[in-house]
Amino acid sequence: MSRRRTLLLAAGLVLAVALGALFWGEVREELAPEPVAAWVAIEPDGAGVAEDGLLRLAAGVPFTLHAVLEARGRRGPVYYTEAPALRLAGRAVPAEAIRPWTGSGDLRVLWFTVEGFRPYLELAAGPGLEEFRFVEQYRSDWPRAWSIPGRLEPSGWARQPRPPGMEEARFGTQRYHVRLEFFGPESAIRPRLRIGSPGAAEVLGGGPSAGSRAVSGVAASLPGPLAEPSRVFGLTQIEAVGLAQAVGETVGPTLVAWSRQLVAFSRLTVLKEILTREGRAFEELPWRSLELVVGHPWGAAGVSPGDLLRAGERVVVLWQDRGARDRLDPEDLCFDFDKGARVRALGEVFTGDGLVEWGALARRPAAD
Image 1: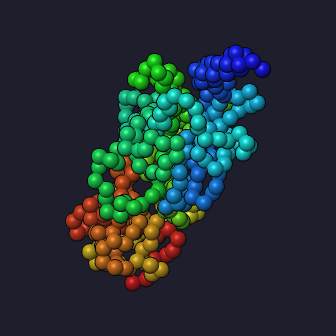
Image 2 (image 1 turned 180 degrees about the vertical axis):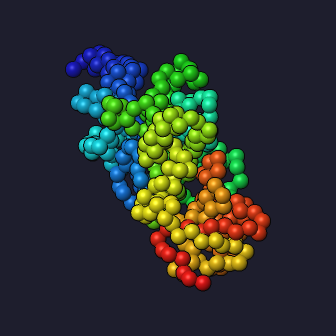
Image 3 (image 1 turned 120 degrees about the vertical axis):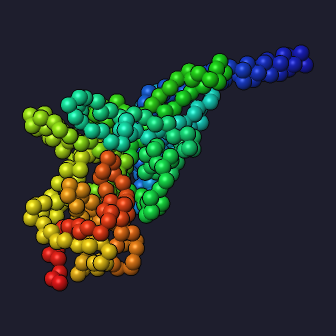
């Protein structure tokens, strides 16, 4: 081969490499799978697989939120995520379809909680249940990452002091939304593409039975009779006050259904679920008068978590012995459902030296 021909071939090879490097980014983008949907997949600690939908967990079980980008590839769907394995819409995703994101450009992962538009809604003669809606709250305090530790924290909690006993408590219901925003060289401010997982519109507007994907979330509950009252933390409380009987008969069944679906709750639906679980009727409970300052015992011979205390129309659910050891006193904690689910000390709810009534769920009170 002549020297001239060798130089021409070398020059041609250099030119081809340069052109390939110049246009490879565009060619690769043309060949890349097309993003079509986003999901939130939740992986309970030790599960090894993440799935969508509303997962029911025991209180305190850690979990991870995984963002999932579904894309349409030449050989079928591709799922970009950091989850070790996936189960979406009730079906296992083939391992070969799961891969980490390696795409070009700037991709931002934004996390939101999906919550009722207010913690408490009172229905009177004006607006009805149609006023209730969900909203997506951007969590700027959460990492912008594909996988993050799961938290059961409504957005309003960051602005409120934590009551005693709630610093490490991990129970309640929380739904999540992830938004994936793609930015290109043409703009670092306005995304060229935005894809979000099911969110606020889908909680009430659909579900798997309606042909739409479910909103992912976690419902974490304490054991035994505390399961129902602990699970509603983070949900909106809706109370029908002063409504005509005909209207109340319409609202009631909806609230019962929403309570079972963990969409919203009322004080009566919580009490009904507690009593139904224990096979008891409210009027059949062995109510007994107590004085908080006397120090009734906790345990088999006395009060237990899940028992009810009432004064007039105010009813609370006992939770923890936090004051004098093994004795009921005003410092002990309860679940209170007065304009939203809250943990309160008994002394905050029942003030003064008057009597309260104790309703034992699973036992008859011991004789004096």
